[in-house]
Amino acid sequence: MIAKLLDKAVAGERLTFDEALKLTETDNLTALGAAANAVTNRMHPERYRTYNIDRNINYTNVCTAVCDFCAFYRGPKSDEGYVLDRAELLEKIGETVKLGGEQILLQGGLHPKFKLDWYEQMLREIKEKYPMVNVHGFSPPEIHHFTKVNNLSLEEVLTRLKAAGLGSLPGGGAEILVDRVRNEITRGKVMTDDWLNVMRVWHKLGGRSSATMMFGHVETAAERIEHLQRLRDLQDETGGFTAFICWTFQPDNTEMSDITPLGSFEYLKMQAIARLFLDNIDNIQSSWVTQGLKVGQLALVYGANDMGSLMIEENVVAEAGTVHYLTLDQIRDSISDLGFEPRQRNVHYQLLDEDHCNKAVVANREWVQKQKARDAAGGIYQLA
Image (tube, rainbow, N blue to C red; front, side):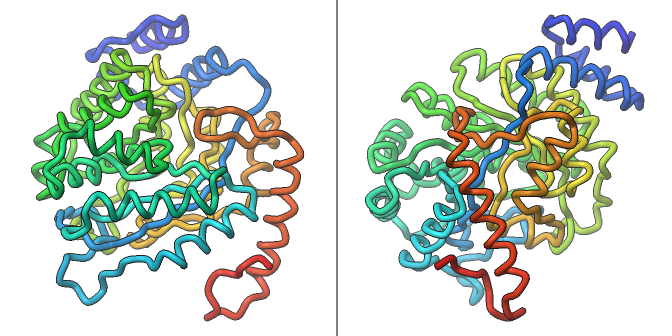
């Protein structure tokens, strides 16, 4: 039965919900991986695999939602809440550009006070100083929150943010797109239909976005497939998702720390199933940030065609105590060691020219050397 389902997916036929659920019952990881890799090679016959250079910038950790799985957020009355100074924000972007990045991931908590014009001004200042940088910003929970704080429609909020410089939407805040799960692990945060509708409206405005899944907490196997089904259905409708990324829940320092984290077996299994099921989403990113270098590399033969981002800075997963850091050389080597050419791409999966890539490699090697030499208490080295 499993072999027939894998052959069906490899041949390009669409799997049903029940068939995908059946795949979750097998422990034959080798067969799942081989099938997922075959699908990847059919969809991406080119002899290169891609990566991106960007930086996760969290402009605030103040959040009105209460998410049991999140170690990063702070309540509005917390002494540990912050709002990033605009000058520091621009400095972080400047360093990213010097390291060859053409994108930032800009996300924050659900701040209770800021109106839409605050975010518009932030975007305008970024684009004025760094017009070449794509702002991959404001996940669906934030966008939904903006509509409530400002009493505006989704269309108006997204249209105004796009006009101010928003380039693409990240798929954050999806967790599992099933309301039973969302009700159990979070309060005061967007529910499934509204999360999807943010993406729907953005896509209809001509925008592109990524899709994500955080699994391995309170969801069932059927709910994982339901999550994938909702994404696939929306992609059939709009075609706006550029990529899918999944990762396992990191419980340390959260209210759900009693949950035993899933290992690499379950991560690779879920990613392979996602590649087999999501036949209309072109790209799947490895989650080396949560899985580490070796498993992140292995993901490239378990359905992923992209190593994701260099991620110069990451705060949210790091607060949960499980985050891995790779150099650009390590990312490129992990691709080339598998026999592929490493190529830097943008958010639309367009390849950047080789001269840009070569300069980025040199700049990142210098940065790594300066990082190693810095004072342990000195913070991130700033390029001259």
